[in-house]
Length: 253
Image 1 (cartoon, rainbow, N blue to C red):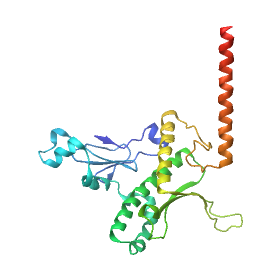
Image 2 (cartoon, rainbow, N blue to C red):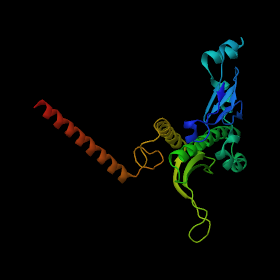
Image 3 (spheres, rainbow, N blue to C red):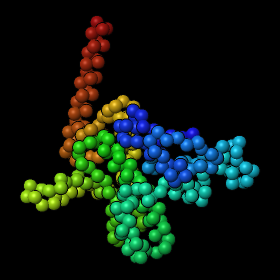
Image 4 (tube, rainbow, N blue to C red):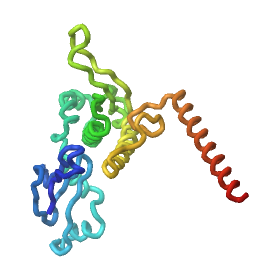
């Protein structure tokens, strides 16, 4: 069976998101699984359960048991990660019809697939951010570059915002501040590092690297800050080696 956890680890980031065949489980709900069931764990992981003893003799079942999801067989499983469940997807859905009219059919299909992945990745990044950087009012959003002559992957960018208070000092609605624009490739690389940070936090109750220009995946590198950070680390390492050498010399004497 499978359950949506609500224990100590899950409480740090809210109830763990678990879907079975497109239906999200409630906290503490359990579900007995059957051969062929599709699971969605979190925002970006989809699995299909294979029970060898219950698999039939069809070629498809045999190949699935021996090789896993391959080629076109993976497409139905991908859609277990439903875009309709994504907040980021809902925020850009209004623009898709207009954009679709400008694109060739094959380009539109490719863009749709990329947007599904980008939306769920953005949701995941936002959930991690709420846990590791509470109170900083940071939010990732998917944005489209209105240039149909670009490759589909280059039409999508991810922006990092610092959300403003509802009103500024004059009582007028305040604008959010854009901190960074990332290509999809860069965002995916940063998201992998965010997952590592969250994994450290989940197991240790803390994470190192906050505010470190080399280690903090939310920060944009600033050359002057990078130089100071590297110089400080080199000085620290040289001091450590000198201390170790002095201690070894004293012991030998």
